[in-house]
Length: 89
Image (spheres, rainbow, N blue to C red):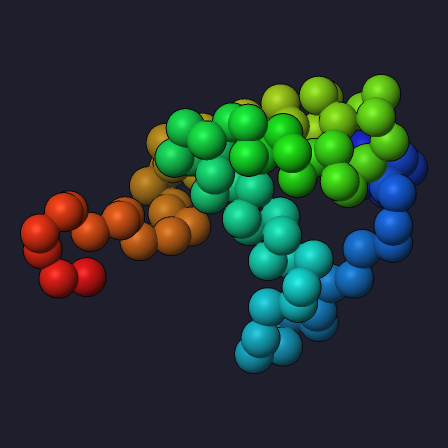
C-alpha cells in the first residue's frame, strides 16, 4: 500500500464499498493479481511498471505476487480457471 500511495504515475480511483461494479483501476490490479496467480509474472510486472515509478515497479510486482499467493493459499480465487482444451467453458 505504501508504494501505491506514494509512488504512482497516475492517481488510482477505487469505487465505494457498496458499489456494484468494479472500477477500472480495481480491474487493473485484479488482473495483475490473476496474472501472478497463473504464473504470468511478466504480465504482472508489466502492469506494475505502468502504475508506479520505475524504481518501485519490481517491489510492487513482488508485493502483488505475495498477495496473490496468500489469496490462493486461502483458496480465495480471483478468476475461474481457464477451461481445459476441448471442453466447453
